[in-house]
Length: 153
Image 1 (cartoon, rainbow, N blue to C red):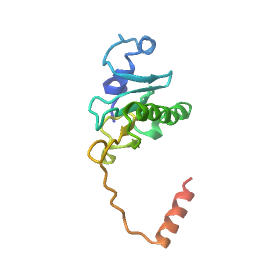
Image 2 (tube, rainbow, N blue to C red):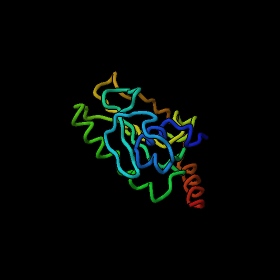
Image 3 (cartoon, rainbow, N blue to C red):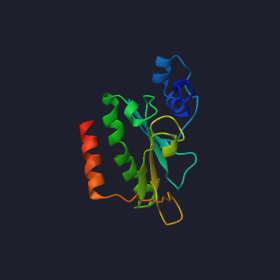
């Protein structure tokens, strides 16, 4: 687990002067190519894109996984990808895209700060390529899993 002080995305957020004043830090730690900013959310272009227009949406609140984001911050982070994707589709001409959010190292999360990838998929070779290795299951196994999940909700 990373601390907010060491987090690259928190350093990008701290570029915002008002937040820097609260954190008692100078603005401009790490510049970004901002697409959208509000009090709770920041969207910017990925500096290691999988395709032209690959963007990230992050909460300004540091949380490693989605479950670490306070409820009062969550709705805006979940609503922001859609308008950003609309603009990316218009700007890139790529009508196909992936929206991805990973939680934890074995789930391929590289930065320990919640973030959503918006990845335009203009053709077969650019953008995200994924495999979907399905597991065999049966109806009784799914029924038991459903009961287990519901008992914990």
